[in-house]
Amino acid sequence: MPVTNEKVFISPGRYVQGEGVTARAGHYVSALGKTALLIADDVVWKIAGEQLSASLEGEGVSFERAVFEGEASNREIDRLVELGRKQQADVIIGFGGGKAIDTAKGVAEKLEAACAILPTTASTDAPTSALSVIYSDDGEFESYRFYSKNPDLVLVDTGIICKAPPRFLASGIADALATWVEARAAIRANANNMAGGKATLLGATIGEKCEDILFEHAMLAYQANEAQIVTPSFEAVVEANTLLSGLGFESGGLAAAHAIHNGFTALHGEIHNLTHGEKVAYGTVAQLILDQTPQAELEEYLDLYIALGLPVTLKALKLDQASEEDLYRVAEAALKEGESSHNLAYELTPKQVVHAIKAVDAHARAFMAKVGLGE
Image 1 (cartoon, rainbow, N blue to C red):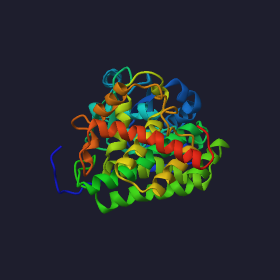
Image 2 (image 1 turned 30 degrees about the horizontal axis):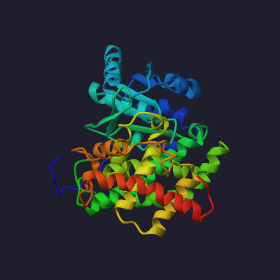
Image 3 (image 1 turned 90 degrees about the vertical axis):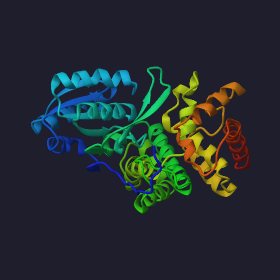
């Protein structure tokens, strides 16, 4: 990506959030097109497929449902593009979690169709962005795929999201807490954001506000999620996880936290059972260490991550048996050419990344001992 002094801010066309807004999906989608390819897996469809179907049909939107097969891969995008082409779909609806959403964006771009995103969890900041994280069919990170525009519509039903497992909300909080940590580092380094320019004042402010909201409301939102109820704190955290984090990372910039996450996907084994946000949480603490963050600030992150059940030790990350060679594979993948780890104001070596990964474990265990927590 060429270095530029242009400031760039991008965002979805419309963002709608609230309890029960799936009933209004037809109203919003019908403004984008009348023939939809609706991408959703069976689990999501069982939860709210009937409600979404009724809303679309009530507004004259005909649709064909395509079953999402689980991985945001080039093969899956190409398969669904063929279905959309046969149907002559003019709007693509992504209904589900982060990978289904990223797949829908890829399909919409290839078909030059409108794109509507309806997340069923607040587990990632994928819904609002003009990019997809592409994995191999085996789940290994391959690349970021950038698109010509952001989704036309993002519709977030907090009534559905509050019924998702709290682990997903915690994962989204972890993903969103990386936003300001990475954006401020990229801004400090005068690096480009994900939109190909420098951060605007608004882009930076959104990232900073995202962090403020999360430290203030994360635990209250998590408790509301456990009770499957929608509260003001729950609404605030869903918005932070989805909109503030999405705009903040894309128009602010990524750095080491997500690069280290991407490095973790190069490993096989139990770590693949962890969510995107759980791996990002560990990468965020690693970046804080590399950034020479003061101990008191570092421990604020550790305290919240531990309270949310996020992995901050190698054992919790399923890497306590990992070899030195495994950790170097992570580091080398995190430092590949084009990775966001190069958006820092300093250069990293694989050894420094490995040491940071080990340091997260050491500092977390020391902190847990200090506050009387076992692993």
